[in-house]
Length: 158
Image (cartoon, rainbow, N blue to C red; front, side, top):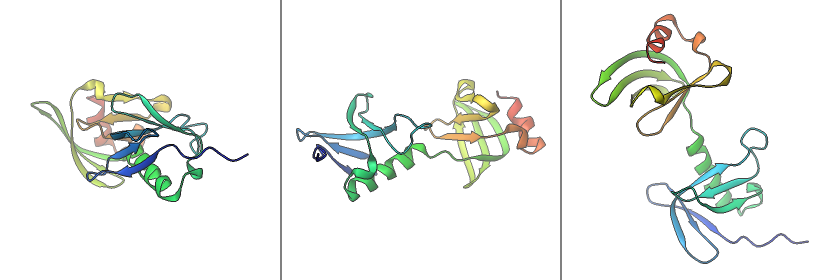
């Protein structure tokens, strides 16, 4: 039995957004890949949705895609799933539109703005995720592993 031919194609826009051309030839810009089973089967079942969250394509096995489409999809997934790990908190200051954070992550020093307390969420197992005003997520896997000053600053805001 031969697999069905691919009914879509993937590309990157000039600003690195995912672009899907569906089987009817319509182009959907700014699409997002979403792993349907990120914990139990991360290598399979990826939905590609439009800006409103409507499914455009469902890919059962990304490794079965042509090399160029597979590369584009995996890069888009990596970009979407990018979560820097917060290692130290230098300052948290009240600003006009929330709080300005100055931190060190596993990728270096970063400044970002958190709009409100709801942007700081406690996850299972005690880890914390912080979402900045651009929807970038930062992970603190174990708040107790932070240095005492960082923990003290964090405890004021969650």
